[in-house]
Image 1 (cartoon, helix red, strand yellow):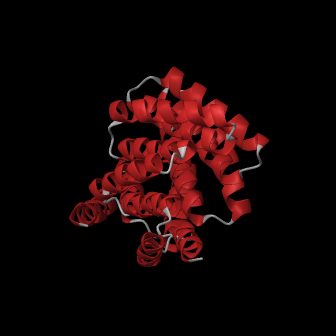
Image 2 (cartoon, helix red, strand yellow; image 1 turned 120 degrees about the vertical axis):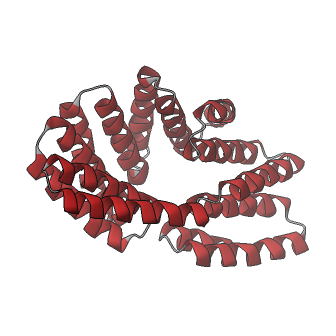
Length: 275
């Protein structure tokens, strides 16, 4: 029950509370000698560290999860830890380190017939290839993730896949297709009531409109992104929004406002590094 509560807290962005609950659960499963429960909790604690951008601690938790999952002969558990390890490497900007554990996890999930985790792994692989500027591979993996997410009706993964497709299409120079995917992602996020994903989709839409030169639409989206982000706080993501807002204000010749947004972005990025 504590493990389930911790997951619920994390899914609603109450990460610090989730960490406390998950650690209480970890002590109980260790006392009971429940290896599978212990490994799952190492994974969950790693996820919480990753969300807090405490990446070193996240990697340690996933390594511990893999060790315990192997002791329990849990192949899917090992693959889940490998997927989470790869996902964290992606968040660290180390796409080249992410690919081996993600490919290993993908092979297991396909062999075990777990489409939901297959989709999650495909998305992380897409992000890794995007970081390495291999956009063809990125689009292929995101497209596969979108197809599977729709087949299993996992709308959060559907929103993520659409958003990643949009960002990648923008990177290859096709803002029209990027806008189509991101608008789709935004609609799914709003249907879910997921303000975190909504804020991210709005931010990417503002970047798309900036790339196309529609400064009015870009301002509408970036303003809405900040409003949504206030309801789903994330200092790193908010800093990125202010950085894009600064770019917009600079293009409009509003240099005082641009400087203000740059200062806010810098302060938020600095707070993330210190945490």
